[in-house]
Length: 88
Image (tube, rainbow, N blue to C red; front, side, top):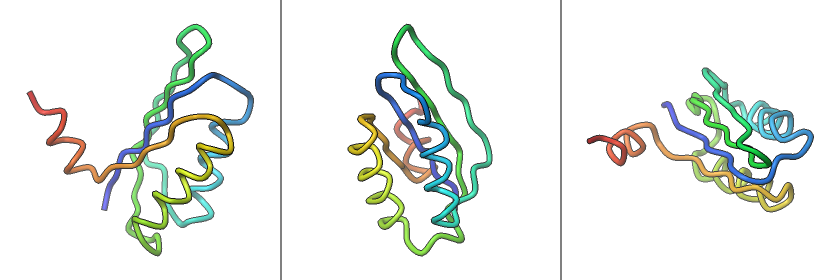
């Protein structure tokens, strides 16, 4: 199953490394990634495969914990829900 991970917050060293490291430890594969810096703000979107992860809920909780620790907002949504929300 595919999901979309979004990360938004003040730019700082190591955000990509910490997020991708956590995902790897949870058996989540990063299939595509896009990131940019808008002045001092970091924005990243990742397409991930959560098929091998224990549970989607566990991945979501761990990403939320990491976001609080790093000081950024990290959210994950099922790809179908993301697509439905962004359909015009």
